[in-house]
Image 1 (cartoon, rainbow, N blue to C red):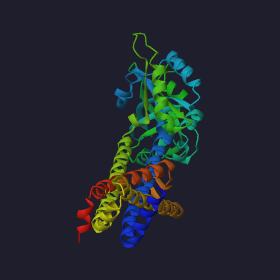
Image 2 (tube, rainbow, N blue to C red):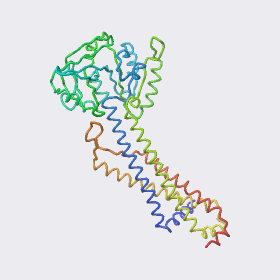
Image 3 (cartoon, rainbow, N blue to C red):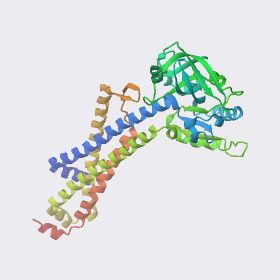
Image 4 (cartoon, one colour):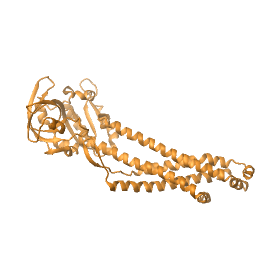
Length: 412
């Protein structure tokens, strides 16, 4: 086998220009795919981080049927106190959970005493909310980065449209689940930047104020947002938590809870899927580049070395060894292209990180792109290139191994 490698390398060096050109094509393909995967993966992770860490949380638990009516924010589908206790008892013993935050979500009227508009409000326990969605505080662009009783955090476009400033007194009017209307005065404590674009109309108040405004005799919760210690284990934990909560039944004997990851709650999941699809097709392009390049150079090698193949066959070289010789040449080309491509690709990624390229996502300005080199991606790309190189070499290698020595020696 060592001698076959020596012969394969020697043959590649005999045609340096063609070998360099083929290896260069493979290198360019590897570099392109590696850089694209790193940048797109970085953007995807940053986008998911902005969505989950600034408003949604990694996953949410609701009463069964709540998400289907989410646009209406139905107060009749809030979790009752006993249901909340059962749910918290399950979450408290999960080692994967870093934090969770109960919320009361409802819509209401927002008035500055001169005009009125609509607002969506989240009643939260401030400390628990900031632990569950740690980027929420960075979205507060004016005022205090905390929420106290009697205070409200107002979305920025609503504040501009209603000419509301820090320290102003406003009134929030809401309808409780019985249909009665109640109002409460609040002091504007902060202005909140939207995480999803200019249409964001979500404000924040203390959960005790929400309870008072909605005239709840007992604390009822719309949802519980959950943050995990490791985001990578989200799907596994989702399956585990769904299994645990499926045992919890309501008075009708039906499941009491439903669990959803951020993917089911945010339209930005479709963008993440598009990035994955684009990455898949970019990998297909790499396979095509390698396949065509290797197959082309190996077919030419067989055609140009027909008399040589006839000679080595005539002196007793077995067809299997002739086949192995050409396959090893393709294998060596694949390794060379993969190694050089990985080195160049990693270097380019490091240079891009040093340049600190910025971009905007939604209302978030000046986010710095940090392209991460995932060792698993490097291994996957390298293995793919080498396997495709070997496959591309098989057809020309079979052709070479099946040549009749006499006919090959007659070739001019």
